[in-house]
Length: 281
Image (cartoon, rainbow, N blue to C red; front, side, top):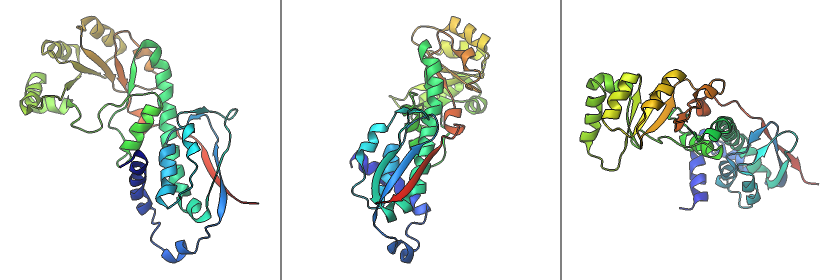
């Protein structure tokens, strides 16, 4: 299956949710006259989700969607430099797909735009911005895609991409060592383990176990500095827990490899995009 077809298949479930096949009398009588579609970016943003946007109309049967729209993916626009993008569609297709296409484009662009704000702060320190699994059910693929367009990196796509020893594992199994032993006993040769660390004492234990990836969860900046001083070669430090645009500067510390931010997917401010239709002539 081509990448284009993957996007089309992805949006079909959303079209079903929108009930596009529910009233055949209505849909069959919508005019198919070609109209001008005016896509306007009305606030500062990183454009993201054009593949999803065009896929909606393709799933509705459009065969002449302007693929030049895809060149705008990842572009930064603001009210001074943004241009109205104009393309043509049959009226029935444009009207039916307008809201869904805009919803996906707006959601994706919002996440990409917010992600870039974190990336711009962190990249000068060589620190990667990661997403989390705090995503919208059924929209994880789009939301993690949007993070990449914004310059961030993806953490886990699902629970088994990486064995992650979290606080509840430690409580159930009786500590870090016991929880790590459980995951090691599963015997998946290529799966790495990351341990969520909540104190400097736990950090020492995890280092002694030679765990490669350590998430310092809800550490204070001072504790992060101490943790960096303890850091052996070949170990990755990820900072997590309550990181916001307002406080991230305090965690941009040499020796930190990555900062995971749930807010980039679950709290991104909404950007403003509109789609208007005009009759030819």
